Length: 431
Image (cartoon, rainbow, N blue to C red; front, side, top):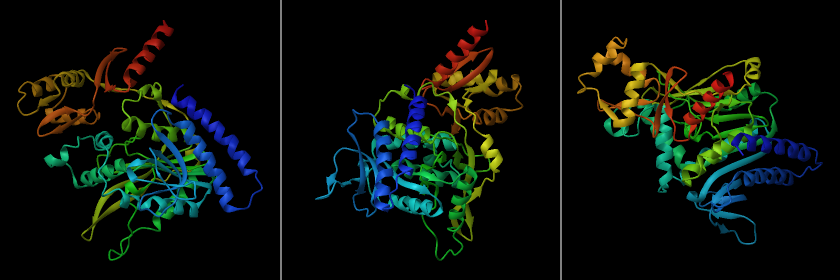
């Protein structure tokens, strides 16, 4: 069963159960909270794999942190709090944290955000697990389209260095989700309310800086009914930096929120418990609809460094119109790009300074210079340059010729193979 099928089934389950819970004539806040926390724990239990020593616990704690978290996905045993059904876990045992809200409105967003805001304080002194390095490396490659070794070679801009730092923290922290079952009636109002909260926490007095609003402080997902806010940190959702340094790190969507929920949890599990079968994600060819919401980049003001945010304004009508799932396609290349990427697949790197034939080859194939060729090839997201050498950004790049065109893509999940087989099937049906 594919991730999309499971997500659809879970979404229908959630809708039916929420309708039942909303009809309960109960006024006691703790009991109301317990009902929705129980539903969330049930959904999470239905989402995880049974052979990994995982456990879903409620109303429990991270060691040395005073916040009681509604639902935790943890590995191994915790320390039981005497005469309760609650536990304390070490930070490295916690895979995901979910804060649960029956209703998600402005005050609930603020409360949920604040519960996660300074979580880093309990992880900074901890030695990260081995999988964190790979998760971080892959996310940095996707976002900055450079390898993490660029931090040592000095080839990162100030903006990229700060993103490097923030992505490392994001990879080290658990998946953080706020799940509200009722709330705003439109995606537009959801976006507007969260931005209003952020705008009240802009630092205007540098003597009294407001901390806790860098990109890594944001939850990986905020759910409000059928709407989601999602972080494009490459774990797994991706949005590379623009040429002027803006990173569209937060998006919104009206697509099935349990699909995004599964993507977040399963992606973390596939890194932590390699080798889980990547077939879990199905063909991985559907591109779910989402709209850009918040851009960020580092900015210096009066000698102070901070994050500058740009709120992407989109009308209610346009948000409601974006509901179609699109199909993923590999990167289309011209002949010269295809030949060079194919060569990189075989020899890993090309020295741009010592390869005497490269410039004449690309000029013969229509480029005005080697610089123009390299910049256009870098724009594909398949390659990067470090110490004058052209190298692949992928782990298992493959090149194919299909329908008379040249393509290349990362294929470690089998995505390119699935796309190619699908295209062959279309051609066969046409004939």
